[in-house]
Length: 281
Ligand code: NAP
Image (cartoon, protein in one colour):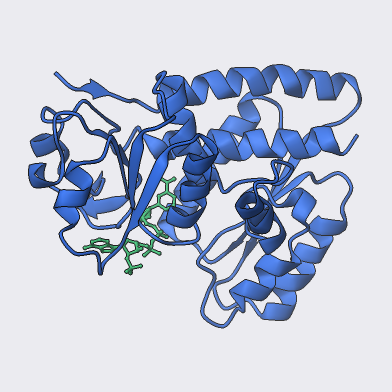
């Protein structure tokens, strides 16, 4: 039987720790606060926003939701961002991406204050991650992957980690985090040849291709630990990149979708917010 690496206990353990740290900040007169900037009403953005807002309510973090229409202008978005940047009572900012096509997303990322950039959108924080400077903030999803493996006592040093994704949101920063743990890393993508031979020989497979149930048992071995980052929908249901029903008894361990990485990502976002609030003292 494979081990199912559920995200909920990992998230709970993070949130319990954050709850204590929030109390300490409140005792010092600081109310941690997050500003969420959302252009449009994409269902996945709203689902994530609700999850974050409900966690914030649980541990007494203030949430400001700045909702803008999908056809919002660059100027309006920039002025809302400037307001959040300048507000001393706001400690962290989340801007939902992808932004609508009329918006210059790179410029928006560059304008987020690096100190309030709790999902590593600003290149200052990315640079720190790639330079091995731990004073920066890593992107939440890659950090959630490492957090899950550590929570379940998985030894990362010397392990072969194969990441199937080369985006700046997942694959590239995650490679840096694995290197920090002394893992050996391979990054794969849509042009990789003989992908299944590479994934089969890995100790850890992280998949983020964004294709529903794309990987079957020809991509895994009984020694694989699989972290499925993909969020897809098939037949009206959320699923990962792995064909869970086919694969889950053929591997050593696997995260489910839903209930895996996504559950931990929102807890990591709040962990970054608390770090930012603590640094503001
Ligand atoms: P993305 O920018 O589209 O990246 C997808 C990656 O998968 C690319 O590197 C692409 O290769 C690779 N790929 C696509 N098809 C492939 C194939 N057949 N074989 C091998 N590689 C293939 O997407 P993203 O923003 O990184 O997100 C990826 C997935 O993660 C999505 O399902 C998204 O919803 C999910 N996600 C989950 C969380 C979470 O918290 N769980 C957070 C963010 C995103 P190329 O570079 O060659 O095109």
